[in-house]
Image (cartoon, helix red, strand yellow):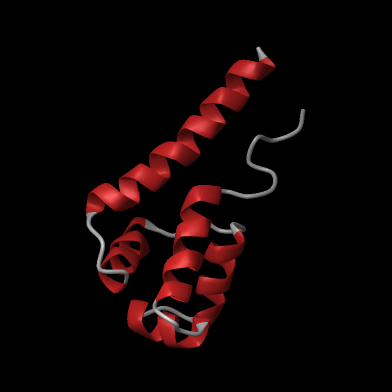
Length: 90
């Protein structure tokens, strides 16, 4: 059985990270410094290959000047997509 997590892990969150970094006119390297993480993590999160840890979600929110509601809304959309995929398999 194909995993529902194959492909993008959190497409809404990935897009939000990428869009907000672009809005700030920052390179991945500069954004990584603001977040306090290696540039490779920013690349993985933006590509949707890896999901940020809870600590890194908090660091991202601070770097993007966003609150928990913003982060949770992105996660809500991603989780709902997985729920819909599970339901369609049944």
